[in-house]
Amino acid sequence: AQSVTQLDSHVSVSEGTPVLLRCNYSSSYSPSLFWYVQHPNKGLQLLLKYTSAATLVKGINGFEAEFKKSETSFHLTKPSAHMSDAAEYFCVVRDNNAGNMLTFGGGTRLMVKP
Amino acid sequence: KAGVTQTPRYLIKTRGQQVTLSCSPISGHRSVSWYQQTPGQGLQFLFEYFSETQRNKGNFPGRFSGRQFSNSRSEMNVSTLELGDSALYLCASTDPRVGYGYTFGSGTRLTVV
Image (cartoon, rainbow over the protein chains, first blue to last red):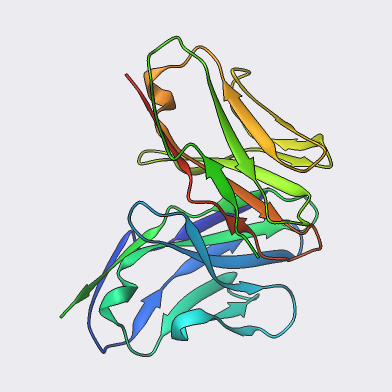
């Protein structure tokens, strides 16, 4: 069975400061991991994905995440927050032996203060 | 290429009615999955179709059903609607190679009154 825990339901940062959104996962087999962003009243947009290649994954809009197997973590970071980054972020795991079912974390709402 | 298209964007239905939602995947994607998003339960997997066959099903009652056509378009149906079925229903398509990204549609917002 697979599961995802996003450790913070809300994160608030000032514009121009770093962003850290934390995610821990549980998976029986080698997982694929994703981060998605959802702006209000919109669908989900893929930020980045880890698929057993490089452990440091770079995504769109300056985001990156590091896969740490020993810590079962996949935290999302960005060096400098922008007002447009305010949204809800979802960490997602796909067990590569369980078909195409995605398991979502509970989400982290990122607020960016001017 | 065009993204994932979900129709309609918004729906209001009465308890007891049934509803059908549609999803057209990205051209060439044969895997289509459906998810329900609610404030209380978050995003939950409903089912996945690949080449017109249901491959996985989440933990939802039998009132929730789906199908996929030969052109990969998918529909989901909810019968005997309940107030708790009010949610954003999201469809995702993917090329089923391992680790490939999933592209989501903008969703259908269903309100049951």
